[in-house]
Amino acid sequence: MRIFPRPLEIGDTEGFTGEKDIFGRQELGSSLTSLVGLVVDPMVIAIDGQWGTGKTTFLKMWAGQLRQQGFPVIYFDAFENDYVDDAFAALASEIIGLVEAEKKANEPKAREFKAKAVGALKVLGRSAIKVGVKAASMGALDATKLSDDIVEAISDEAEELTDKHIGELLTKQAEHRSTLQGFRDALRGLPGILAPAPEPKEGEEAAKAKPLVFMIDELDRCKPLFALALLERIKHFFAVPNVHFVLGTHMGQLRNSVNAAYGANINANTYLQKFISLTFPLTDHGSYQYDRTAIKYIAYLQKEMDIASDDRDFTENSVRFAQTYALIHDCSLRDVEHFMTNIALAAAFTTKHTLRPAPLIAGLSILRVVQPELYIRAKQKKLTHEEAEKAFAFEYKGDGDSELGYTQWERRWWEYCLNKEISEEMEQNFRNGIYNHYIRDRFSIIPLIAHKVIDNLVPSQKNQ
Image 1 (cartoon, rainbow, N blue to C red):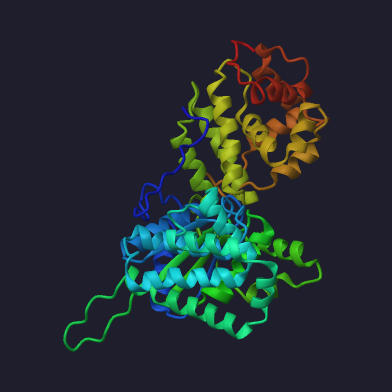
Image 2 (cartoon, rainbow, N blue to C red; image 1 turned 60 degrees about the vertical axis):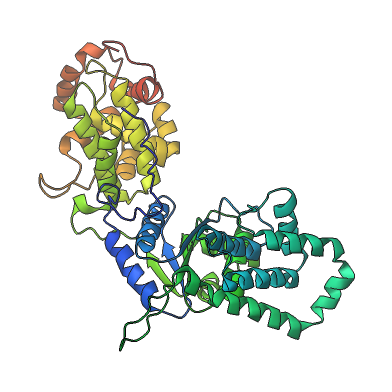
């Protein structure tokens, strides 16, 4: 068994595969591929999803599909690179890196782009030059990405540039605009050498080169100022025909970044509309319960982590309880992964002789991740029946055997352990079921399981 799923390794050109595309997002990827292939005007597309909804996996699969079809693609992790002083240098170095990786560095248009990037970096000031110096001297940027030409030029300029010179540069706005426009013009020519259009046959219209697709992932997790700087640089310097940007982000968190940078009074949504052309949410479109993303992921984890015990009913009932909870509460994939790890540990380190009712094991595993304050109350024998009913939404009963929903047996286990007033029949039925576990009183069951099973990785003893 595994207590964590294996990291999903996705090759650069792998694309969407039946084995790994467990949420069936290939159709969305194909639609987006058609979109970026048809539209010439520069676009900034946001793939919107909360943390833990599979944005990174989707972007990497889509990047592979694009590469399969001949699109030049860059994947950039903003969170891993937010130490960089200047967003322009970060973006430009990634483009140069792709040019060099595609062995196009000696093309005239590629050399022109490098030269224009140097000029733009000079214009943008000392912060961009500091990045270049770090690239040359300390490796803050990968020197294979920031070309040797740029490193050398920036290093020379860094020695000579003074505050006086910067002040003089700031007075030459027309010259600056010309320099930056030259950079944009040079960028416009890159898709033609990275993915040149095939020669048209006689009588056919000339095909256009495939656009460059620049993916920026984890924009919601990086430093707010760096995230906003990336958006600003894209809009002002990289918005040219046949170059599209794709953002992997949670729009809600990105709006928080805007407010953190500019104050709560700014309309963050309006601000972001200046930079983002289209937004596509990674939402759940499953018509049936078992087609929902979280439900599929739980089934995948059960198989991937090889969750099993000496009692198949215990495993299946625990998984079903988790699926019902995830369906009702629209859990993130990160939360699902964490509470399924707890269930896997409980299955591995207990036996059929352990007191481990599946509704309690699964429920406590979930609370430990999703509502830790209630989990602490449960361990302290302070959790009430009303709190548990509300936390799990026990009123959700599903619709027949084929539908997910809490069963009477699942609800009654929590009622027996928490409700102060129960019927004599319930008291007798449950007491008969646990008579050989030497339980002091029914209110001790949940704290006991929390301490002895959920929080304890030591294999249990018989009749624990």
